[in-house]
Length: 148
Image 1 (cartoon, rainbow, N blue to C red):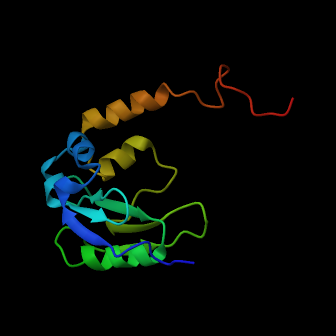
Image 2 (image 1 turned 30 degrees about the horizontal axis):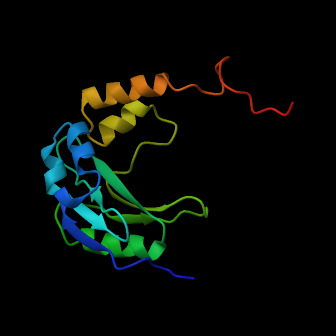
Image 3 (image 1 turned 90 degrees about the horizontal axis):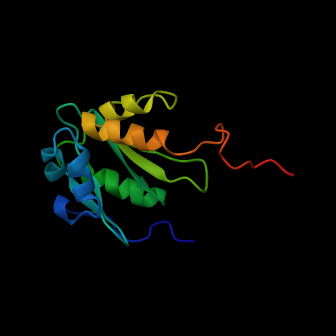
């Protein structure tokens, strides 16, 4: 069993696979430029620092060892205060490295999460609109998962 997929590296923000997506969604797009691409095997993903209305952030990792490496690397650069690893007790859920203020409780509204992570009003509204168009199991038109 491998504990880490590969050494974690920090690259320039623009090398992150999701760089353009973050720039488009953040209230302060310049925060994307202040971030770092966290590179493992596969596509590097952007770690966006706190600043302005962005109060916190996180990055997900399959292995605890990768999360520990990422925490150490992000701890050496500005914008990532209060770094902590959240170890998932579940095999199908990733471990996370969080920074900044503690995130809202899981039961909070999506708009509260969007504001906490520094997304623009437009990005939050777009997300809420897309989410409202997704059928849920509570709607009459949604497929039933009950045995027949």
